Image (cartoon, rainbow, N blue to C red):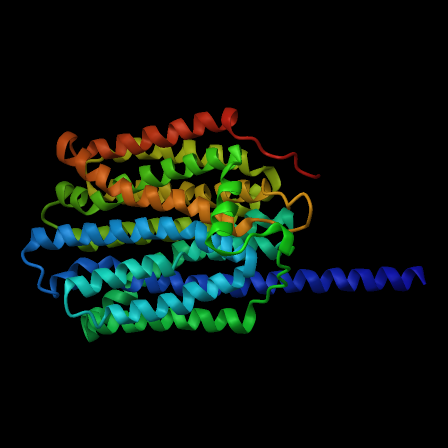
Length: 422
C-alpha cells in the first residue's frame, strides 16, 4: 500500500511538472508573438506619421515624441488598475485583454486618416496593452517558487527575441505592402497570440474571499494603495524606474550617435544592426541568468547585472567608430538580459500570500512595477534629448553608467531577500 501511494504521489508530481512547463512554454510563445508584433510597426512610426500630413520633418519629430510619451504615460496609469483586476478575476484574462484588445486597436491604427485619429488610438493602445506585466503575473501564478527566475527569464527572452525579429519583418512588409498593411499584420500577430493563450495556457484561478475585497473602483484603488505600502516594493520600483530611465536616456540617441561616428554610412541600417546584435545576445543571456538566479539568489544576480551594465556604458562614450559601438552594445546585452528578470524575480520571491488566505497580489504587484517602468520609459528620452543638446551625445552614456553603478552599490544595503530553501 505504501509503495502504491508513493507511486501515485510521484505520478501526480510528474504531471504537475509537465503542466506548468507546458503552460510556461505556451505563454512564452504567445508573448513572443506580441513582442514581434510591437517590433513590426512601432520602430517605423515616424515614417507613418509623416504620411499623415503633419508638416515638415521637425513636426514629424515632435509628434513622434508626443506619441511615445503619451502612450507610455497611459500605460503607466493603467498598469496597476489592470493588475488589481487580475488579482480579482484571473491573470490569464489580462493576457487575453492585451492580446485581443491590443490586436484590434493596432490594426485600426493603419486606418488613421489624420494625426488626431492616430493619437487617440495610440493612447487607447497604451491603456489596452501592458504585455510584460500581464505575462509575468500569470507565469508566477503557476510556476514553482524555486523556478521563478527561469520563468521570468523566458518571458524576458521572448521580449528581446521579438524586438530583434519584429523590425526586420516589419521593414520588409512595409517596403513591399505599405505601412498601413503592416498595422494589420501586427494586429493579426496579437490575435494569434490570444488564440495560443486560449488553447494552450491554463489557469486554476481561485478568487479572493468576498470579505477581503471591496467592489468597484474604490476597492481597486484600495488594493493598489495597500500593496503600495510595502517598503521593499517601493524601493524596487525606484530601482526599476532608475534603470529604465537610464537605459532610455541612451536608446533614442543611438541613431544620432551612429551618424556622428560615421556620417558616410546609413545610420538607420547600422542602428538596426546594433539593436539586433544586442537583442539576440540579451535573449540568450536572459534564460541563462534566470536559471542562475534560481540557484544563487536574485539580489546577488541583480547587483552583478547593474554593476556590469554600468561599467560597459563607460567605454561606449569613448568609442571612435561604429564597430567598437556594436561590439560594446553586444557585451551590454549580456547584462541587459539579466537585469529585468532578476529584479522581477526578486520582487516575486518577496510577495507573500495574504495572511488570511492563500491569495497573492502578483497582478497588483507587477502593475505597480510597470507603473515605475513606464515612467522611466516616458521620461528617459526627454532627459536624453536635453542632455545631448546641452552637454553632447557622449555624456548620455556617462549619465546612464552613473545611474546603474549607483543602483548596484545601493542594492546590498537597501534591498533584502528572503532566505532561500536549500
